[in-house]
Image (tube, rainbow, N blue to C red):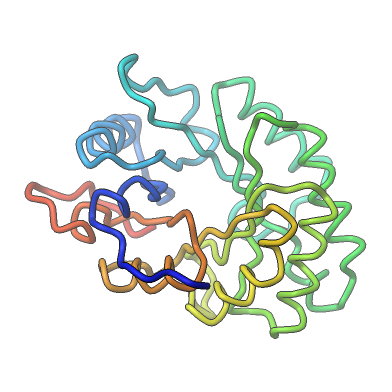
Amino acid sequence: MTIDTQPTTTEVAAMIDHTLLKPEATAADVEALIAEAVALGTYSVCVSPSMLPISVPSDSDLKIAVVCGFPSGKHSSTVKAAEAAEAVRHGADEIDMVIDIGAAKEGSFDRVEADIAAVRAAAPAPTVLKVIIESAALTDDEIVGVCRAATAARADFVKTSTGFHPTGGATAHAVELMYRTVHSEGLAVKASGGVRTLEQAQAMIAAGATRLGVSGSRALLGAAGPEVASDY
């Protein structure tokens, strides 16, 4: 990566998927999330599929991202595809799907590609498809293999983490490796999981991320006011 200047807080905000994925989230929590996202100028909100449909202000460009096969990735491809298709029908602009991490650990990248391709077919462009690879659970070679599978399946992004896996979240090393693997093929990188400070966000962007998954966006951006309660 060759980023010579650090992005401003406004520029960082415009890269954030403002995220609320805690199991106990309510409709009121999502309404607060949307209001906060608009106030902070984030790119999108990211929510669980059961929270759809939701609406954003008509004068806002805020996008709606929805997770799929979350958080384990151990759903069948048929179920993931159905979940993605339903989310799009209910207004999702973007789908963040979790791969079968076990298939990646086995080196079965053809299975990973087929899994992604099933979701891509169910949620074709212009829906944006992000592929969560759980990078902290993978070796460098496995990260590269999964990124190549995502490229072959015509995804739009590879994404580091769910934020739920015990091995951890995003690292600058993983983001840079993912960027080097997919950038020339036209894919982008989303860093998610453990991105809690502006400095961490800037480091991920310097490593190649153009999107960030953040739950504590207000605190990260140093904005005044109460934070929407969320761990993820």
